[in-house]
Image (cartoon, rainbow, N blue to C red; front, side):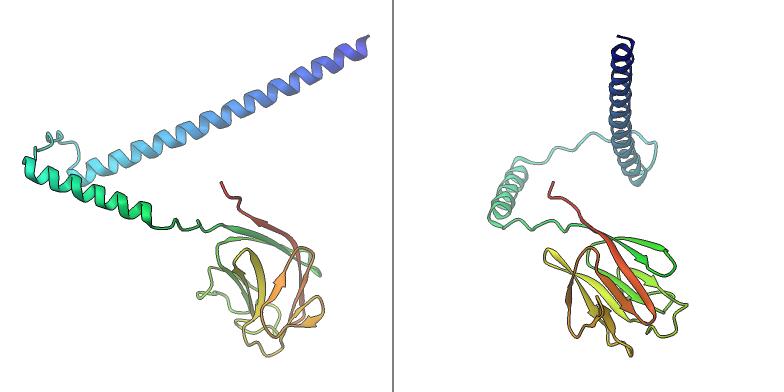
Amino acid sequence: MWYWIIMFLLAAGCAGMLAVTFMSIKKQKAEKTASRRRGRRASGAAARGGDEEQEAPRRRPARQSRQTQNGQREQQGQQERRPKRKKKRQWKIILEDIDSWEKYSFVFYDAVGIGRDKEGKMYEKYLPLTEDKRISKAHCVILRRGEQLFLKDEGSRNGTYLNGERIEGPAPLQKDDIIGVGGTRLEVQRVLRESDQ
């Protein structure tokens, strides 16, 4: 009997904690949204001249307002005819150096460069492996093509390997693959893609 009472109390406590957590997250999101709106209003007021009183909106002549309405209708018609572009989705990839167990995590849209250079300015994100002298300055790149990630060699001297085989062109990349660059081996631990919301 005591066992069931304790189990019920534990379950009720867990449910209560979850409810409180969800409510606090919702409250924080609402506060962030409100602060963004306040920030936009404040920046707009600052651009108009600070704390001065806002002027009353001027009335446009009837002819001009009709022209604007017609222009707005035309714009709406054009927007309806245009095909909607797909929103670019973010990717997240987690790599782990097999020998040193160091983990590298990147959130990106198009490309992550790997090389010996300290800064990969030509890439969206960059993994500098400065200790390995057999790696070229711009060795290889993980890039997005459509709905998949690929590994591509960037003309490196010692080549790029995927699961022990040297790659010549872009090769599909997935979870548990091992990327070989110079003497460094990187395991792809996770590949995540932003959902369609």
